[in-house]
Image 1: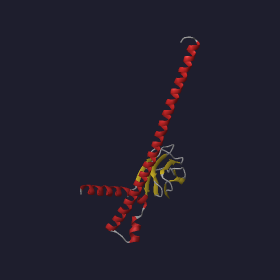
Image 2: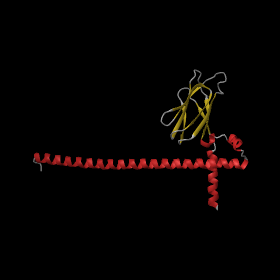
Image 3: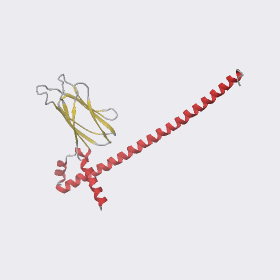
Length: 210
């Protein structure tokens, strides 16, 4: 009974974690960009809100620019001269999605930060709207959340398993190439040694040293 309870507790912890959103603070440099990335699988909804914070500059009004790109370099969102904004998209490819921020106004300085609220997957769902639409509440609503969370965890495990198999295949292919290269290098060394020995023997015979 103990292992079953432990597995159930672990599943609930994972489900609760998958329902959370990721909020981060980024301190922007006076020059250059500050980026944040997240590895996301395909067919996942991404929703993010960002806002510029500058408590140490009450009299100035700096603005920022943002650019979000896919793993293959496609621009998913681009905005400039902004203090707040939002981007949303559904991933069509798996990999690292990158969001970069920088100050694009003439007013720059230290103490300028960006608050980024990054949500993916089931964290983007509006559960209040779902509860009103389906007329569910209380325990039934929580069970619906856990059901969706468990399904998300299952899909993530399938994705991680596929990535692991892909990385294992690449590793085995690389190891095979290294082994063949080592054999080839050893063969070249043996051939060169034999040729050097044959040349020295011919030289010594020509000089009548042997």
